Image 1 (tube, rainbow, N blue to C red):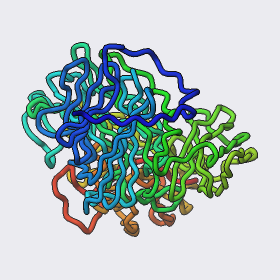
Image 2: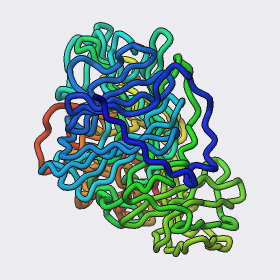
Image 3: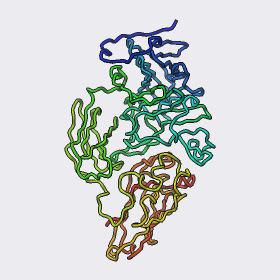
Image 4: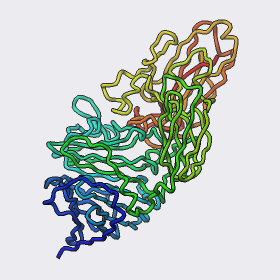
Length: 550
């Protein structure tokens, strides 16, 4: 006989308003052969295995889970206990605990509301999984959910062009699970649809993730050949190792709750982010309620450049947050865990002010109007190519970096480029410098006799680098000192849909003897002590700005 556990906690849900549901459906949990089968009282019936994976997910009677693998944490949670708890007629919680060596001690929750076609989830790791990333993957059926994000739809590819995860197509276009991903600060809802069906992930606020507001990570992968439409919630990954926030190395956050987040099932329409506040009453390990949270209010910000958006971010070993600032620089960041934080002001994606701030529970910390003191864009220059904003987006192919491989024919020809200050458009300067593809980059510029008689600083700003690449510079044939390697994430970066690393500036003091009156020629070539795997996986970087100081 099936076993159903009912634990009524009436006071907890007295204030929870739940939408109506199909009275014909049977809300509850049944056990069968060790599996737990959950009926949400509406259109969802899904199965959680004894190892904590979701082996079946039926929406309106149609099986959505792919035929090859169950959905779950990584390639399988390996749970040692799966415990269902039903709260009255309102909520079911499935608590899965794993002590598998690859996870240490990890708790994962599946949660449903009666009559609501969402599966809410939350994940609590005590150590970083040995695979170096924490992710939940809904492994859907491609034939039922073929309409995923275009840039990550590998269906019909002609084979891998890089590693085993970047693919080419007959027209030369490229796709990958890395492409088309949004910045952490922009994550809301994303998914895939089919005929009368849609599956979407509603992301959490990323407070337990790593890398700050501008990192991107995998969100989707469509692969009709393997019958898969994978919809991801990447909570952290090794793609961002060695990222620094406010000058401090970012580490995986453990002993904290990731989420809640949700997988939402619809008739194909994109849902709004659901209200998940009811989860505060469920006793999830690591959940921090309002009594342990506060906020920060910034009254204003002086010295802003009106051409760029500004935001403020906060980070410490247990949490990260951010919020956009108004045109006057004011803003409020709410629902922060109490504690001491590094506070950073960003001009677009460039840190221009940092300090420390303390958040106390149930209180608002007021930060008086600040004045930006760390914006290199305010310095007087003889010439400047681009602007200091922490991105290469204004340069050649810059806006394509997140959407396609740099070899994709939709990109403009990478060069090598010769850029003439005063006549060449900013958009013709390369967003990326690859040793094996478009080197050197040549900059031609004129100096008056008075300018040529003085020493000047050359500044080259980058947003990330690959394979230890740093600028080798010659000015009128004179080689400048080779700088040291910048600290950057160890991933492929520029070919995997991101330019986000650690913003770094290389500076040289160039003596007057190296300059001439009239036209000067500057050449930039990547230098590295490591050999290159391929032309595109060669030593290089993404540019932020290049300038010669006055």
